[in-house]
Amino acid sequence: MKIAILGATGYVGSHLVQEGLTRGHQVTGLSRHPDKLPDHPGLRKVALDLLADPALAGRTLSGHDVILYAYNPARQSQAPDIYEQHLRGHQALLAAMAHCNVKRLLCVGGAASLKIASGEEFLDSEQFPPQYADFKPSIRGTRALYYLLKEHPELDWVFLAPSAVLIDGQRTGQYRTGTDYLLYDQAGMSTISLQDYAVAMLDEAEQPRHHKERCTVGY
Image (cartoon, rainbow, N blue to C red; front, top):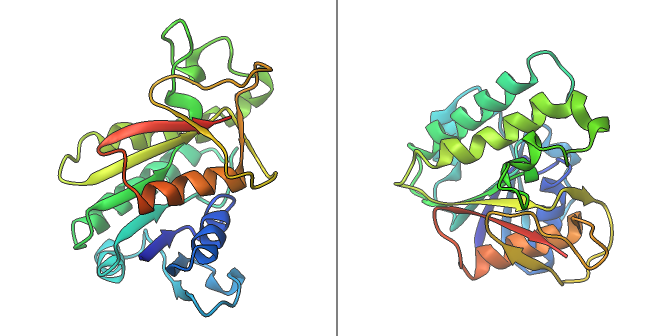
């Protein structure tokens, strides 16, 4: 399978690259800093600024079987315009898709839009950890992608939301899936490792189970 990964050097994107290569896929890693990508015979490194030329980005993405979108605007999570930076990235992606012959689009989402038992979205509920309040503009930026995707029925998109806590850990190959509500393990924790999130994303790429919808993964 030919897989293009936008944001290939990022916090999540780098794990998607590793998982794709481990499975023997032909991976195109697209980043503003492709020199940060590892050397691997199955990896093609491409320097690309998505915001600079969406039409060029679309042509570069053409010919792949699936596109994985893991764009993050430099993790400057408390920058005054971080929400707008996220939006510009999402809008550039959608503009690029208009110049692309690939319709299957898997996006790295966030837990913010998922619901808790009351029906509230996690980000707007009292369950959202107060210590992360300063990061809300960035988190809202990720959440906005879900609502933008819903406006594009011509794309076969998936917004894959991790559990509330997404951290570096172990690759167990085990996870549970859900749709609209946060997942919790037996200890009451909502978490998944970056490695197992990447497993879930590549599983979805290889064996599509979701179409034009949000889904979530966790333990």
